[in-house]
Image (cartoon, rainbow, N blue to C red; front, side, top):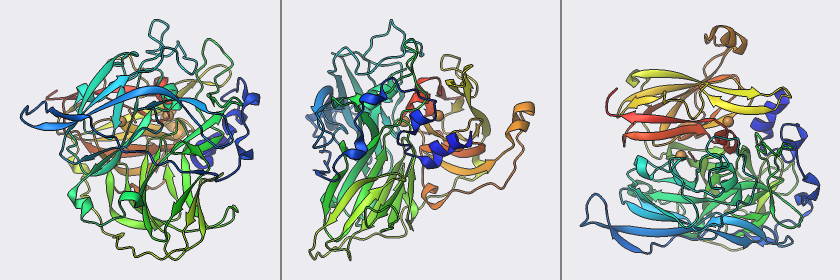
Length: 534
Ligand code: C2O
Ligand code: CU
Ligand code: CU
């Protein structure tokens, strides 16, 4: 049991362990490329391009106001993940994965037409026993969600509002929120994990004046890093291992055999001896990463520190130096790395199991006028007394006779059951996640940003017998990297994780879910309502 926990929490990238632990039985692992045999650091790191609006269009609220209008199409394309591999068929926004970076100003709304130009057959086997993915539903369906966006319900990408190839949906993003790195990705009911493995994700960066005044590294010195893990077959195609049961191909987690940064395996980046800002997104289906820097490829080597300045929802109150950055699926990290003083050297970004990106520092002298200030955006803590209600919500895992996961539930309820979380607009609530499983789950709420209150160990057997929470240790306060606004939070096994949020912005129907996409697709997702009054 504990090994499994460790796999998902500390083991983290779990190269190959998905199959080794017996939970995810490989159907055809033998025809996969052994990615560890590939030449290292031979491809330059691709930098996702910026999305360009196709023009201006009248805003919905105020027809006299013209707002940028983007048209982004989802397409199938071919790309090489590595110099020595055959091309891979992928799906991406505007034919790239990750898709183009949408960059906006805080307070300045945009409209995006999301055009589904995908083929009608999926790249991966659909499990028709999952809710929303039955055989009468079309195989290829998409709906785009802006993760971390305070978006009206009609534009939020509700999982059941998908469209099929040949159709377009229109979304308005008001961007009434602070600077932050959000991301857009697919959210179609029952196949989100497959659409994401195919490549449907991209960054969405909000900027504001406060951040602009900080004089952080910008332009070519601000680099997005979108991290996903994938396995590949010998013919270059992505391998998404499914279960041995053809009626129910769903597996409880996906761990790839290698890690792609901006779509490449083991890329390198030429840098100058100066400060860089990295906007890091873990867009993996299931993998958690503990990222660090090293000054050589040897696994014992140590290296530079990250100077972490932000998380999911933007700047932290205080920046801090750290050797490690932990990112679960859906989480973002914003760090500054200072390469000055290392002219002509090499550095590596690594996970617990692999060096995934090489930095080559030029032997040059540069005059770096940017800063990395310690005091950033003030974040007033929401007092617990502001909460009008506390909800205790369980995370649980149901297994079949063979001990395989069948489905995971939030609060013991399936997706199709009536809404249980009905929150009054502008009210503050505490949500207390009681993890009854032996995995960490990254729990994400749409619409709101929240603060982590604490994590407290509890007695699981007592809870199972009596439904009473008996704590077995002290409440752990957030670590520095979790002291900013969050939208996705790691809920560790055998712990109660409490968050506090003000539900502001819009009334309507949203969702909350586990961001391990296999879990999300198999019932670990629930609708919730923001209502004017109860
Ligand atoms: Cu990043 Cu509901 O999703
Ligand atoms: Cu979201
Ligand atoms: Cu989960």
